[in-house]
Length: 348
Image (cartoon, rainbow, N blue to C red; front, side):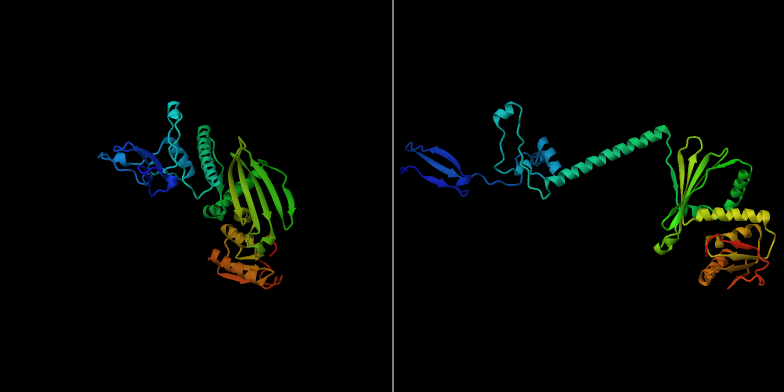
């Protein structure tokens, strides 16, 4: 290299240096000066204009769309020096390359695609749900009502069912009720009953499915589970589903039938004998008291503990009964000889 030529290397290193050829104005010689490019900063350059909008980092539409789908991006003002510039030929042809560089993301491409699909499916589900709701409203469709066991316990009492059951029994005797043959099949630890009936002129007909599983006592579950479904008598559309976990509704219906029988068949008495310790042992005395009040109650069960527990429940339910006795045994010559008996129909 000649004496009038020199090389100056900037701090950027050979890989990042730029070559600039200058000519000397003194002796016409030339020298090559290697200088590093201006350091890249992530802050936008300040301009002399007083407008705050000039200092806002902007994204191109293409960059904004792709960056939002990936979850992260680098603004134009912080673009690394390796970003490709817009080529004149591409600009002339209308094919402008995006002037941005995708930043590394902690989420993989599959995660991003999964989130995108989930959002898309949610949007489709909401749209279809609104469409179904709109079409249902336009067509006048009614959804089936669900009545839970708690709803039944809070809305229906034994006294409320006596007269409806009496009218249903009278209609059945007049031949105004059509019933299907009862279907019965066994379970490994119980049995299932299916019953259906329709009353002439009634707005609905019903189907009852009841399961009795004595082994549920060891599972901390009620032994009886049933459902009653009401169907529109004209269209056949299901309208109401009544859940009867524990058999409360079925028990109230049975006890109401006992009250109707007591009204028509039982003589006035002061003493009532209850045989058994199940649900009907608690409901039948209350049903009998609605038609034939009494003051003395006798309770017998094969298990003394269960009989004592039943007597305590009846003492709370029938405060007007002054004398309540738990019998240790049934004796035809004892005090229970002349008392009307109310049996539960289930093993005690």
